[in-house]
Image (spheres, rainbow, N blue to C red):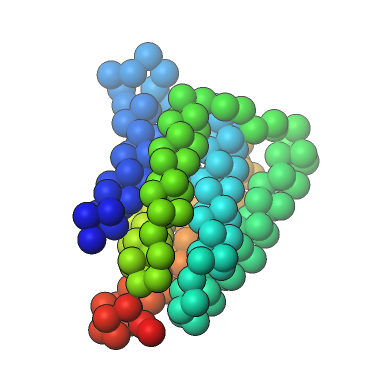
Length: 184
């Protein structure tokens, strides 16, 4: 359980970095559209990578179904972001936020890789609940308000219900795992 809490804290810290790097005390108070696209690309790729890890490690049907949905949905979002970026001539750009997000996600993935069985399932789904909640908050509080292009802003707003659905699905799986002592 200590590792599970650590995994949640790590990803929470990573996403919090996206929000905290965008405070008035910072020299850069808003993200540019290319930086926003870079953060969106990074966050989606992180969830795809973690889901693929879950598909390789978990034997739990609920975890596997959730992970497959994450691969499918986030791959579609990545394609949409790529297509929109091409249409708007916006190339994803690295920022301190996206770099921090990637570094923290790598740390989280390494911790998940160390786990097996029920411990992995619990840590993975706990991470997904925390990750999606912070992504939703970051979209609503930072990325959407900072987006300058109306079409990008609209696309970000349109993604929120998908991520809210992911969060609810993750919470349902989390509750089921807790109720079944690991869901086996």
